[in-house]
Amino acid sequence: MRFLRIQAHSYGRNFEVSPEEKVNAELMVEDAVGLVLLDLFGEAMVDEVDVRFSACSPMDQRDCFIQIQAQCSFQSFTLFPRTQENIELSVKEKCGMMLKEFFGPVTMDSVVIAPSLMELSI
Image 1 (cartoon, helix red, strand yellow):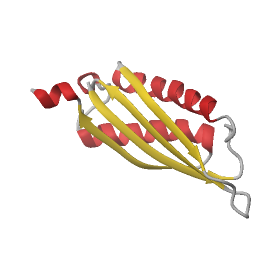
Image 2: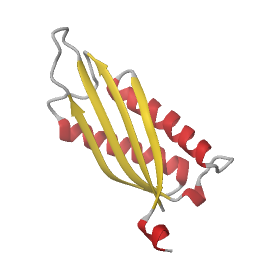
Image 3: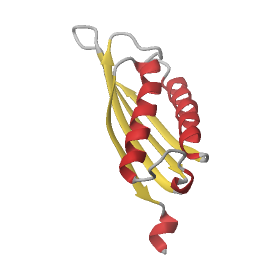
Image 4: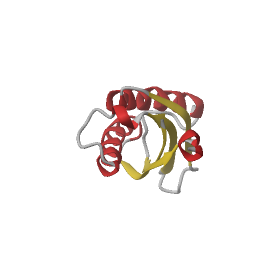
């Protein structure tokens, strides 16, 4: 298993998720991203989701920052080629489409793949 860190942001006036219900937003993102990652990797586990909304601007807009940490088995990645670049692009595309359903226009800032602690100790 490898660690996967996803960072994204959105801004707007209306979100499908309520900024006042941060915990529910995080749970919805966790479930949806978990399904996307299962589809891409066959096995995956979402460890943490953090959704933060800024205060409203004078123009009644908010920023929304989304951070997701997960673990995935890259050996079972379902698309070819199984290169790091293709994995990162696929995660950006699929997770970006899912996040747009909740937050409107989303910018995928980064997808970072890091070795697990077990891989580091080998």
